[in-house]
Length: 590
Image (cartoon, rainbow, N blue to C red; front, side, top):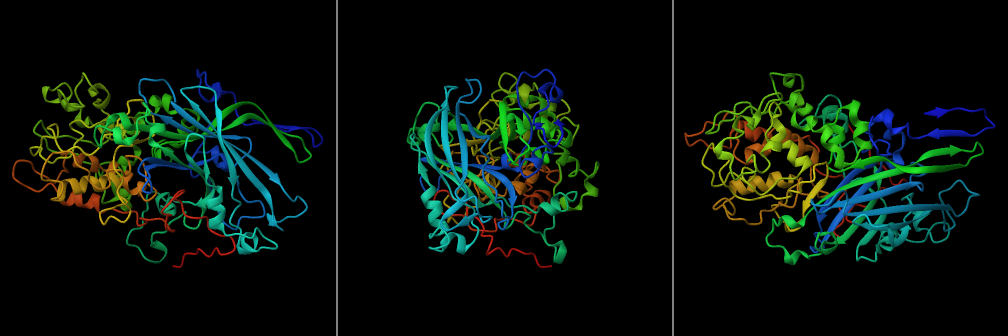
């Protein structure tokens, strides 16, 4: 709500319309918004906009977990004279859930930023060794709802304006940008390493194609060639390297895990940004913020708000926390994207997704199964004695995972809302009789944390896949499933063993993971196929290979943009250095 007064008066901008107008009956005092401009309200407040969240076991030190929350989307490197930086009146927070038996967050890190103009007499951002704006931060930590305690403070490097501003010893800062990054890495009181500052945006996707009604451009040429819509853009990153023992609910280090899928080492992570409720402009160039802090942005799993939540609910989704996400379950159990992967619905109208098709006649020994929107999926076996002892057992999780007319409650919903348990049917089809997905198989995932809500879940006990491993893949857990099913090194037994990329999305999220491709493949049902719910062109009982054309089509599908435009660092903070405004030359040629 805005109330405009005369030019000599004050203008009070209410950033939050009373919560009851947005969500009747709520007792939370929050706002709305989030990620790469995908929600209407946050597009007007980029400083508070979560763009991406990453969580992975460190390839540099396997005793640590890397958490990276990015903000301020689509920054042009030459975007002066007022370059972007973290907001001073924003609470940037990283939330950790490690114990399903407790309510709310178990650990919260809060980052507060301050900025000063060292030389307000110039329009330059950097001149004669002085910075406008020079930013610093404090990191505070709360455990189990305790009061926040400061654990670190440090500098934020300036934007990478150009070599004269950064490197010149007389008129600039007299250093290198890599040295600025190194000098900004701070050690917190709990042993965490922290970096807050500019970075290359590590996300990669053909934004222009996908948002043009699913027009992915793999294999095209000229103007129809796929293009990374985020290439050459910067973000501001809050990066943390945290000892596993500080995140595990009992303070255990990873050497104490009982197996590489130990469920006691699962964490859920989400990030947010909050502003004070009221901003007052004084009419002479100043402003103040008052009132309670209200959440205006959040992010857990990638692309939730962009590609799953409908536009009429996006602001509401960002206004809530994961602990109130039950109201959005319908968008996961009958996802809109599945409509464009079904020729009986709207599939023929979206040729870019033509290789992605929903299983509508998947054969099982208990009958055929239809995962098309509005059908029953595996609900047809609800209560069957064959479910006893599996995750679909009505005495375990069957009532949550098997729902009438909500076919994707068995796969998309748990991937986003609970994580996936190491129980049948959620084991690879290795060792399962053809057509019986409920039989025990080969374990390959356990990031199950039954606190319902959208979080990025990671099992910290899963070993790291070295980035130079020839089997390392940006397809994450999907590639682990492919190797587990087809590679003789892994498909010879149902024993638990490490398969490369078990540490990849959606078990956490590495910088390299192609989450857009993985999520589109998952909506098409590739996770269902991995556990033995094969595609429609597979006939059980005749010895046919389950690697059918339909499955191959899904596995080989690509948006055409499969990697970042800059190589990632091999050490903390891992994100590539931000693009320089002076050197910027990123142009597409057709």
